[in-house]
Length: 282
Image 1: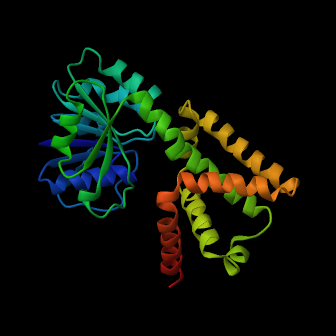
Image 2: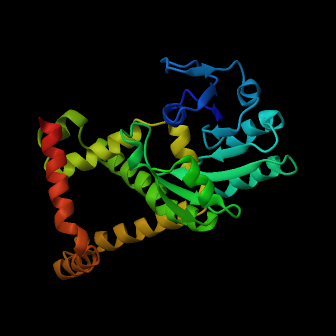
Image 3: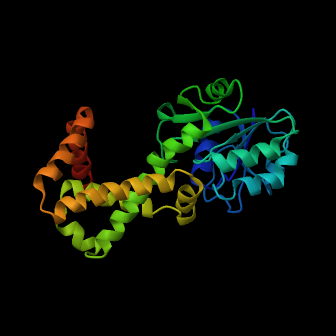
């Protein structure tokens, strides 16, 4: 099978290039950036249009905010009957735009969201959301990724869930890092950190090491981001009231409510925190 990977120099572009090569497929990639490492069997094309010529599968692994605009520049070069695989983390706007450019071209569309990063060591650990864009979407995904755990979802259901899984998680950690930086430098913080604070700051630093434009797009493109940000502010405001009023009972009541809600995970979670801290301290 001939596979084209658009955005092949990015993290996920490299991942999918390696993945399809491991299956024995012919892989051609293209990117504005030159590949920073050679992958055995990988061909780098001069342009996106050149990369997709003769392709059976076209993987679009480009930044969320430019995916639709960029796709329009090479869509006409994709062979009829080919399968286009898009991997954006927010589907609403991008999926609508891609469908518009696919209309009338006799191309199939598979919309997925990989729930893992490009450093994933084992293909058997892949977990992928499959957006039900047409009949047979899950079957198409299972043929391409037979080792993966597939999670079928509707587009709206997916984006709402990602408002919590991605948008809220990123926002919380950015705000945490911003708050800490007002009072302590990272080295001062690390000198007196506890296991839980160390893991929390590590999460924040991991997020801040990523592309600002990507994380901005995840916030701005998801229609649920503002709603969940307001819910977070509500929770913080409630806790602030307890603190300002020295209301121990109110604080403990809310703490207990949440503890019960997560009772099945709490003890195991704390052990994982300690284990993560100990590994990072070695």
